Length: 330
Image 1 (cartoon, rainbow, N blue to C red):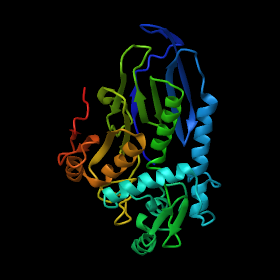
Image 2: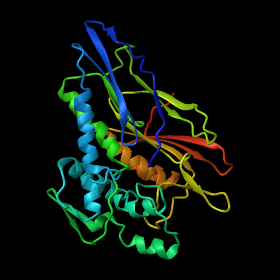
Image 3: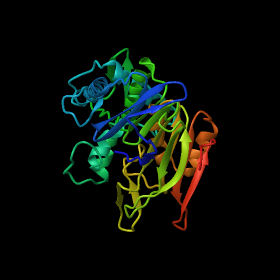
Image 4: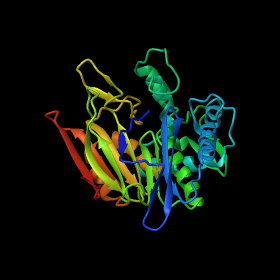
């Protein structure tokens, strides 16, 4: 599970007066995917889409939640299902693309190891050693499972799929598509810090202002970067609240190294990615967390369509920040 720490200056009002017409501001929120959601939009007739949006979340949960035992992905992992729905297909295709572009750093089949290290949806009570990890690694590799139309084809009998690193971002995009279809020009969608904005905050007649939280290990809250996000999506992956320590005090992230099966040792504490879609921002934020600073810099030099903001520890254990590809800063 990833942690994203974003805050918003929403200035929510029941209604406000725009330059030309009165627009009602609607704010919907509630629990979903083990976190919370917040959807804010403006309209001229005070439309309430709570039921429709909750229905969207329910359908996506039923498709891809590893925490729901009767979901499609849970059935796939138990070898009870091979034919999947359109949502599953979209996320599978996007995941396969990121898998290939990152040379396997992003790999949804790592879920077996995520669970083995007790970072996932299933509790492991078996002691881990190198032999156990090696035995589980034989099932890792997104190249071992393909998709033909809406049917999964497995070349190994036990791949375990886990889309937690990308599914929340996808859900944000689906809600955005719904609001677009309803002709809403101004909105903010936030699911546990994965977000997408369009237009302006009509309550303030200004852009949507968001912030990236400092990685404070003591649990205190402060913000490193505050800026206006314009018609884009952003996702943040952080490792500073969920990690393991070895005997020497080295921190290992909850993100598993897809090549070794062990938790990633990284000095990156937080990665925020801006992209056109929240699904892609979500997936790349996870991949960048595992890559390390230098590999992220090299990767982004070849991918101008992505922007990233890294907070990391230098050799003196001091925090440093790095904004890449013109990531907006305060």
